[in-house]
Length: 313
Image (cartoon, rainbow, N blue to C red; front, side, top):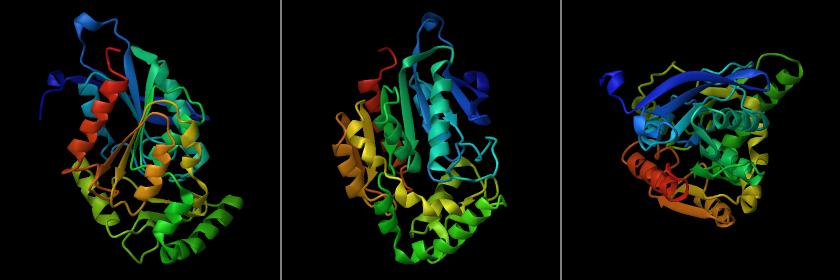
């Protein structure tokens, strides 16, 4: 384990407020360079996907970005991970989009940050969020959408009739509990085929296990369930509706064998963006986070950043 003083970057645990709730953020900074003290650096703001927390592999990406000279902010949505918020594990699209806006506002005023060179990096459900934000005129220099959720109806079709049917009862019970101001009814975010969970593709459970192992996490470190009511709303959330209004450079990274966010709809969404770069990988939805695909995926992200938002630009 290297001494902290030998690392090419520093980290600090900070917080920002989103609708009155404190969200946790880890800020990465390149190691001090006496010859570059006046440089304003681009900032990459990173958010996870469906039920994910920042400790689940996002730090691995952040370390590569900061080593390349970028400031990086990795945050947890309210109610997840180290962020505050109650009820816990409540995945609400509107709330998460507001958390993104708050995180971006926080990043813009960081010491040494260039507020005009802000990059939004999202994966899976978070990849959909960055498309939505860019399409709704958020001031961004670029976006990176890794295996993004782009179409609610397509995601429901990919899930299949059986898994969707199993979710209806707990989702309705949870919605009723919310109306009565009672604790949530939870379901697992990831489960084996045939179980009651939001994602039950054959690669879901092993995919999550590989991510946890690569992150140094074990079962119980973080909850892997979500409030069931989100199952009533996933089919209504389609970031692709905003794709034609994404005017900043956009990197869209697609898994060829994605059983969660189908390749064809992601490609159609990317084609609507005026400055899109598309990479397709021979893998599934849960594979970009770990080897043997991680290094290529993050290398393509760095190449995109150097081309469109260089550190010295």
